[in-house]
Image 1 (tube, one colour):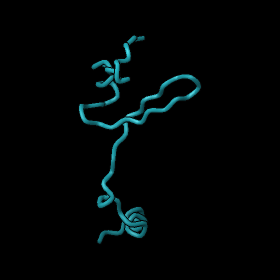
Image 2 (cartoon, rainbow, N blue to C red; image 1 turned 90 degrees about the vertical axis):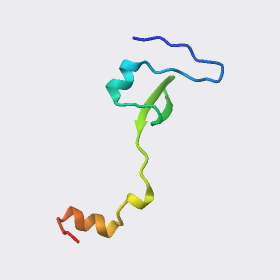
Image 3 (tube, rainbow, N blue to C red; image 1 turned 120 degrees about the horizontal axis):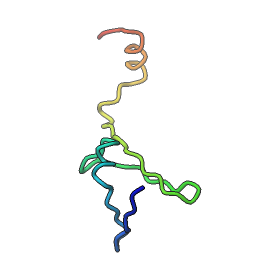
Image 4 (tube, rainbow, N blue to C red; image 1 turned 90 degrees about the horizontal axis):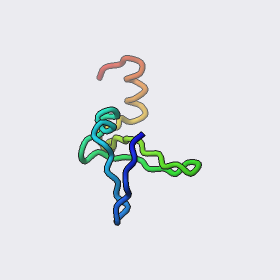
Length: 67
């Protein structure tokens, strides 16, 4: 268990070994939740809307159809 102090602006430094373990790098995004009196921090990846296939294209890709 590692103990850290919350800064004046409520910032918190995540230890390097934990960042390596979960694959966090500078500039990455995280989701922060309060659950049952605990703080849960989860790494998140943002996806550009232009990179998301339409439902039709996704269905065709799932069927192995190549355009």
